Length: 221
Image (cartoon, rainbow, N blue to C red; front, side, top):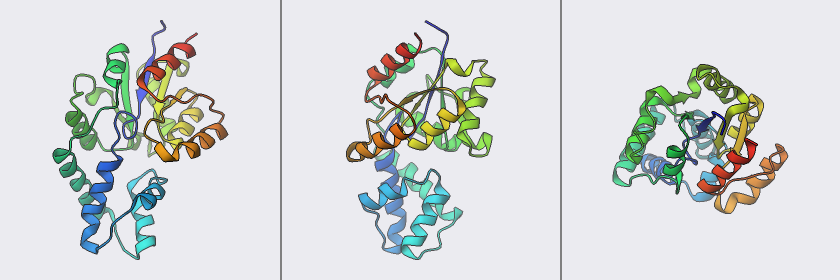
C-alpha cells in the first residue's frame, strides 16, 4: 500500500451536524418569532459560510443579522450538542484506525472543531497538529488542500479528500487530489447531489465507510 494522506471534511462527513445547526439557528431566531423549516434550511445550506447564510435569512425575513448574531448562533450550537451529543458516522472509527495519516479540513473555527472532536470522543485521532482551517487560505479550500499536501510532504496524487459537499468536491478537483464524495446524509436530496457531482465529472459516490475504503484501495492501483 502506498503512503497516503486521507483528508476528512467534518460537517456532513465525520458526522451529521445539520440537525444540531438547525436547532441552534431556530433557538436563536425564536427571539424574532422566526423558525426555519426543512425546505428553507436546504436552501440555506447552499451557502458554505455563516455570513452567506445569515444574509440569505436577512433577505427572506427582512432582518439585519450580523457577525454578532453569528457568534450567538454558535453559542447555541455548543449548548445543543452538549444536550444532544453528536453521533460519529458509522464505521468512521475504523477508517481513522486504518489510515495512519489523516487530517481534517474544515471551514469551521479551531475552537468549534475541537469542541466537536471532544463531543464525538475522537481526540485520539485529531488535535491541533492535524486540523486545517479554510481561514488559513482565506476561505479557499482548493488552496487549503494544496497547503495540506505541501506541509505534510505528500504528492497531490497520494492525497484523498472525503467530502460531502458539492463545493468541497469541486475545490478538491481543482486542487488536483483524489476525491471520494460521501453522500450518506443527503437523503431526499440525493438525486440533486448525483446530478451535480456528475456535472463535475465524478462517477463514484460513497455511501458508507466501507465504500470509502474500497474506493481508496481502487484509486491506489
